[in-house]
Amino acid sequence: MPPQQAGGRQRSGRSEVTATRVDFYQLSRDPVDVTTAKLARKVLQAGERLVVVSGDEGQRGQLAKLLWEQGGAAFLANGMAGGPHEARQPILLSADCAAPNGARMALIADGQWREDALEFDRVLLLFDGTQRDAAAELWRRFAQDEQIDNRINKQDENGAWREGR
Image (tube, rainbow, N blue to C red; front, side, top):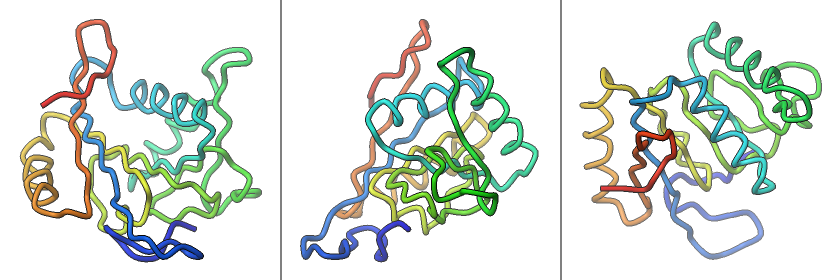
């Protein structure tokens, strides 16, 4: 499970207070499924586990299929929250921000912010042009909160993500 207190929470067994990092990813070149696969791969390469959050059951199914079909040994093992062996899944797809797989990172694929996402160490928020205003409002709110380290990421013409302003 993720730590208990949102945005400046105290970790079990540790007394220091830490900030949650929230990375905003505005989708422009690549669609959500391609971006999710790219980011999920980076999370696993860093030795971390991930919860991919979407309130859309169809989207979760599509993402699960895409992650498995990355090709050869490059597939990204995953499972659905509530399914068998959910605690062992390196990538868990879920409708909410619970992390029975012990993930410290969450990727919000449907662009809909959930306050309990702040319980994670790091959150990757994907959003498209139709969600830009809501993301900008959220960005401004987080900019006022010392317990949140918010960053924006933009995709270049070659498909690489770069931290930007």
